[in-house]
Image 1: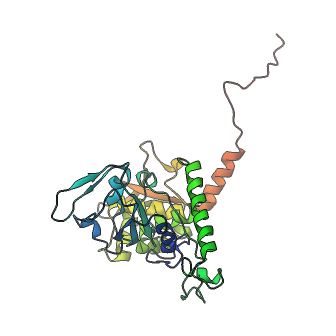
Image 2 (image 1 turned 120 degrees about the vertical axis):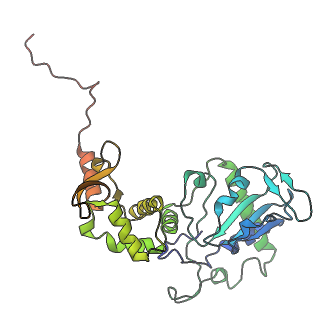
Image 3 (image 1 turned 30 degrees about the vertical axis):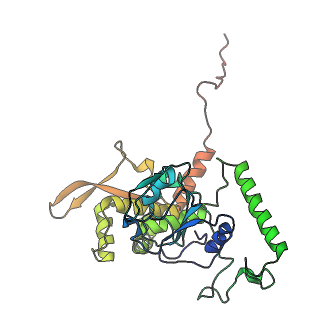
Length: 322
């Protein structure tokens, strides 16, 4: 996926070299199985793996749509693959012989959990290579760095030998560190994944709502959700659970802290007494509390400067005469 932080969840920063990488992989693993990731409903096809065999080197899900359901591939990544061919009996490819999966996308992956991270080895691509767009005044391609030659085209024996040696060095490095693979820098990947989970309209609303007056104080949960619902016109409003998850993502991106422990009650929730106009009396409601960066930083500094006292090993000075 792209490493550049996205301004919008809809940004698809292509032309960075993702497909080109797999053109290189194809030179060694020629028997790939291709799935069109642009078809966001492809996972509903009962025959999605028609033509897949244990002789395939890998499965490439190419240019995955932002709405393609990644969780469909969960069991295919960690278990055997059941193939349901057209006009034939289904068969199983054992995990040890099943082709591994390469998932290529220009978008962040929403609502990431530990189960997702346990199945994904991220490979991120910078925007060093890019198409000419409103953000880039010129196009930059690999041929600009290699004397005008495109990769894999018009190569002589020397270039092919350099390429094959490089690929074998990559295999050697992988085998040396198998089980402790090198991870891509996660900062921008995490930001893009969080944005994908929030959605653009939620981030736009949250950016406008959480100004200085609405930080570092209790705000009734219903008041927040009603304001968001009004902002998006009601039709695109989130459920209570989805709203909280989106708010957590917003806080992570902006280094805010949602519902700090010191503001919580014994039950782990934040409550406040507010006047109910309809009932004409005070009532207790659940609240959200978004703590600003300044308060978070101050609390961290205070914690670091607080001396640590070990009650079991601290020596007590005895000034008694006996």
